[in-house]
Length: 165
Image 1: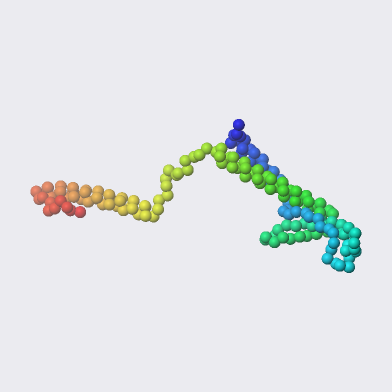
Image 2: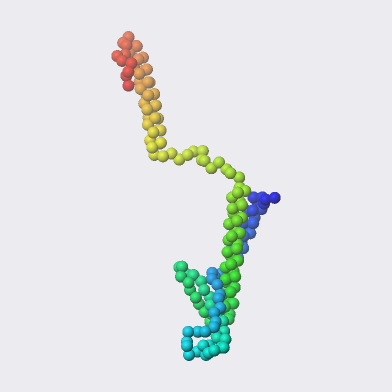
């Protein structure tokens, strides 16, 4: 049975709380390089020498450029490992948030989003004003015609034309 809308919204709120509680995070990876160095006079170039011990490096991107840093101390490496792990957990929570949000979008009922009073364009307003002015002028002139007809009728005179404005 699919989750109810309330359950999904609670899941989303829980994920948001977890995202807010994240400690320091850092994108990137830690790689280890070892073996022979670039100095030809170094003992690591002797036959059967195992080379230098693996050295850890932090690699990440800044403005689409790869940046590689070495660690000053083992504590700095542990700190970076923790931050990278936090970053990966943050990414998992982001994916979960998007998935739950998509489920909420599908579960939420469709509402009629058309407003009862639509916004009118300037042309529509101008046309409406024109119609109203024409209607009002028609009423005014109709009243004047009636008043004039009454007045002329009182003197026994017929109006000159029925096409009076």
